[in-house]
Image 1 (cartoon, rainbow, N blue to C red):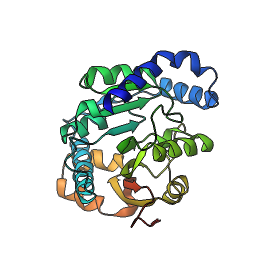
Image 2: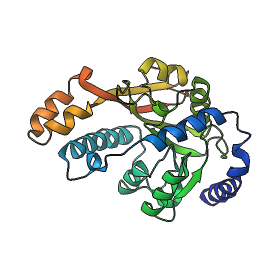
Image 3: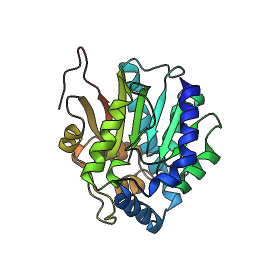
Image 4: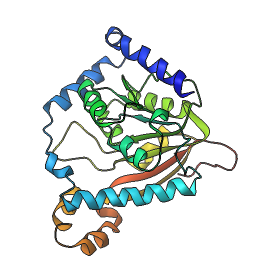
Length: 261
């Protein structure tokens, strides 16, 4: 399976430029590209020298590893993993650190510059594909894990959101799971993104079992407080209304998997 997926991905990447002009999502794709071109990244916010970043990364790691173990996904070495909206590959690198095999991993990303950065940071065995996740070139039930991290908040077109969600479920094995991490609030300083509430998530994945928790202390608080008090940061991170993310898993319908909303 990995060889077949890799060959498919490489062929697709070669033809993406010719196809982009005919995509039904061209207007939204153009909006997303323009939004990212305007965005200025403060790399220092994501530096491992910043305790706010360390706190939130470790919180996410602890919860996801417990969740993956609870659903029988550990160890990861034999699991086939797809990330949609893979960006520079940060979440894929996390999964490799946790034991995933690079040759079993694929990242799909719309923005060529992000793909280029990811290629420089990820092992060569990881396949990276530059395209819209609304049309995934993989057969049904190809992956054990499909993940997305802060991609859906960047998509404002409701029809495109629904299509990407459908594609994620289509390529997921019946025994697999979707890993979800995204903002639940709007960002008042960035009108190019829109928070996604739990109700919308359950509508995007009908019949699926949705297991999400509020997590991630609001970044402005975490960045300041973690520099002075780890305990205070932890205590505030347990207050649900101060948490900016939904983090967890979505499971496709199947025996013993009744939808939980």
